[in-house]
Length: 339
Image (cartoon, rainbow, N blue to C red; front, side, top):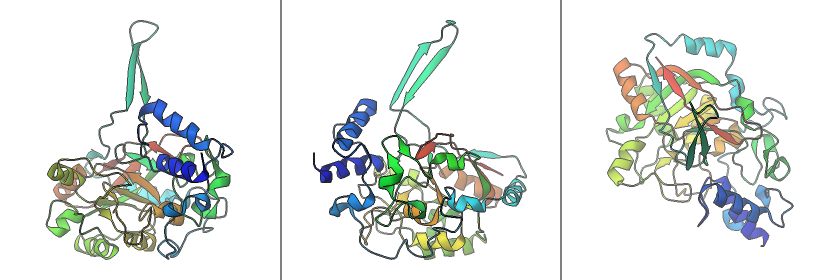
């Protein structure tokens, strides 16, 4: 197996997509085993990926890059902006005690039940791949990278092997993401049901929505962008597309807005808009490796948008608690908003 093929197989796994003919635990492990054969049992670095997978040279994620801002060995990135006073500020937003879950229903690829030893209990086994567009989860800063490197300029070929990352894993967020949350409601601003393929969300639009909603996004906030994914799926009659397919979502110009507002978390229902006119593999996931912004992927934001209208405010206490998984590139989570 040549390096080009290895790189393609591993990139497929990293993107959270199942390779052709590979589903479930056996397919995943088989693909990993095949991918690392002859490659020193390590994930190939970004510079070793096939040329077809390389994004073009552009300045999208070199703009105000946060590398070194909190030290060369920092693994938390912009989550450093969630300070104790910031959490106190967030707690002050809880007035009615209303709670909204932002998690999609979780149906593992594998779920087995057996009786406990006492005969009066059951024990569950779950097997699943949470990266992708199905499971609500939090991404660690080591999840993706481009040819310039992963978070803080580290070389993924040196920092990641088949056991996972040795740097910037999900344990960096083990004390939780607890901060002020702000929802920007794109469909309401557009007077439509959902974001469309021909009109991705752009950075200047997020600025306009914040003005119209009379909210100020502050450093350390969790920025939640509602695009109407459920309405899109209902209308399309098909699931929301994976990274390799066409799908509506956030245009790469939103990355500048994320950096300029200095948010700590980006939480969304749709993902990077694809295809990207610059050919970027990660038009918005790049905020992970360039700005150190934690990503709350695949959140269920339709109920939250409704609640914000009923509560007559778009700010709330945001809580996301990823599991403490050493060398994990992320974790399933059940984020909540408290009003």
